[in-house]
Image (tube, helix red, strand yellow):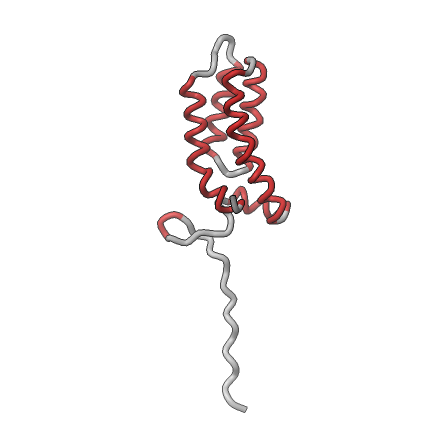
Length: 131
């Protein structure tokens, strides 16, 4: 009857990033979890929304009332966490905590640090979202 046909190879999606030179479809585990729950198309739309909204919200932090700054920082903290932008999420948590103290105010460094943290994750999120 002859030799058995070779088994078909099923390639797994690459899951290594960084120094391995291989990247997954998802820029991080948070996006992968979101895609698992929402589906790829919906997740890409959520990522696009974050990419579109973050710069405007960050700008509005400068001119918002203290109460609104705390509310905006809280929202950005949560959104960044869902996007896998953990440094940005931690920074926004620190800003939120800072604003909860009596007379503390936002500084230019607070805002520029948040923008820098966003900038570090923005390229990968844009690639994923197709933007």
